[in-house]
Length: 345
Image: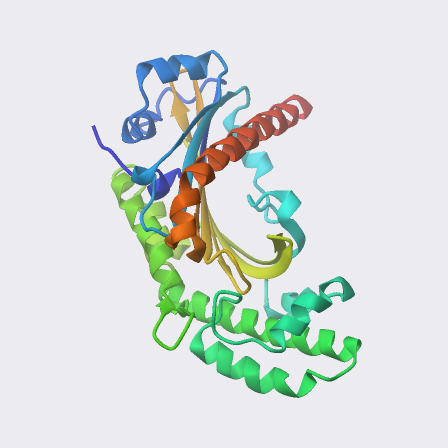
C-alpha cells in the first residue's frame, strides 16, 4: 500500500460520484483510497452519504503548512464535471473573491486596482517595509519604494492610482517570470535582512509529492512538477485575483492546469500572493472511476508564516479542526452544485 501526504495530491477534499464509470478504464480510485489509507469502514460511511474529514502532521510538508482532507459521494457523472470546468472557473471559495480576471495577454491586468474602500491598505503600502505585512521580494521592495515614496502626501485619488499602478506592475512582472520559469521564477518573500521565505520551494514540496502518482498520471505529474516543461499535455488558465483575507484586500496570481480524458479529469490550481497573511495555496481536483461510479477529489494546501510561530503551534490543533469543518462544508456545497448541474443537463 502506498502512503502519501494528503498535501501531496488531494490535500483538502475528496468527492465520489455514483454514476457508472467506464469499465475499460485502467485508472481507478483505488490509487487514492489506498494512498490515503482510507479504511473499509470509512468507505462504507461514504457509501451511506457521510462526509469524511482528516488532518494532522502527516498531511503537512512544512511547519508553515496547514492541510486537511474531506470525502463525500455525489450523484453526478464525468460529463457533468467536464461541463462545470470552464475557463472562468476558479476553485477558490467565491466568498473570498472581490475581483478577478482570466489572463490572455498583459492587457487583462488593466482591472487590477484599489478602490476608496482600500485606502487604509494603500496608505500602509505607501510606507511599506520588509516584514510579515507584505509578500514582496527584495527586488520588489526596492522597486516599490522608488515608485511610491513621492505619493505619501498626495490626495486620496492620486494615492489610490499610484498604488494600483505599482501592484499591477508587480503582478505583470511575476506573471512573466512564472510563465518563463515556473516555480523557479517565484522570488522569495523578504521578511528581514536575514530571513527570506522561499515560497516557490514551499509550492515545489507540495507538488513534488505528486510523483507518487506518476505511474497513473505521468503527463499531468510532469507538467505540475516541472512547468513550463511538458505543458502541451494540458490546458492552462491564468488569472489575477483580488481577495479579502483577514479583513484586508490582497492580490494573487493563479495558474490552473487541467488534463481531460474520457477516463478522468485532473486539475491543479496554485496561488501566490502579493499581499499578506498567506504565502501560497495549492488546490487539486481529481475525477477517476470508482467502483460503479466516478471519483471526484478536491485538494487544498495553504502556507502562512504565522503557523511557524509559538502562537501558530498553540493554535494549530484548532486550525486543523476548523479546516476539517471548512472542507466538509465545501464538499456538501460541491455535491449540491454538481447534482443540480447534472439535473439541468
